[in-house]
Length: 292
Image (cartoon, rainbow, N blue to C red):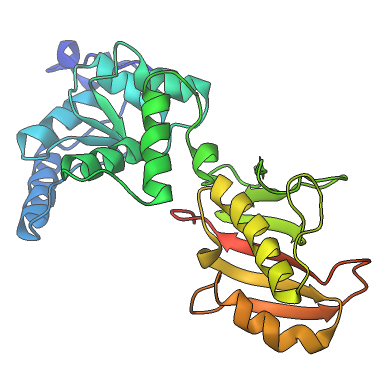
């Protein structure tokens, strides 16, 4: 994308304009820009117009002169065009997913010009004087730093937040049993972590727990380990599937599970199953903090 210099076309007749050309009623344009700024000021908010409404550098400058604090963009091309035109404060409203977009965001011509939604969130947290302590914010801060310094080229899959349709991210944990077949321990997609069934086994595959309660705790510990690897926690569980070797253990399961789940408790299905040597298995769907 390039920015066309319009100064050389001022005062020319319509017949002299290159085609296609957009003709603008300047008095109406200026009036609308002022009205937009006044409305934002009346609500006590800063105005950052989206550049796609004009894609014209001259209009962007008029908006800044009227009181806008900067401009908003949606695409890498818009970012490059505004940087080329000399704009110093550009907000990229979408996550810079992919090596090309990361390259635009961190390139020498745009690094000081553009900021993304993710990096602004992290900077607003760190500017407050407190270090992020929640897994989601800690992960976001470290991953944005990695992206901005070229360590990785795609931030949102690392955070478990996907903006690319049905894209999936595989999750596993070294402290939990590994998938032993054609399945994954966990899959992140659409802002949720889908956990495969876990049982009362340690990472080496040995059965843990002589009592039912101990087996439930080991099962949830495995689920928690995979959830933590995805930047979330079993406290964010929205649904669990429970498979019991003996349904008479249902009441005891309720009590032990409270150690790992929080209110409102997740939706649940409980099924009696022949578990071949152990007493309980649990699968789950867990929300990813910050996901949609």
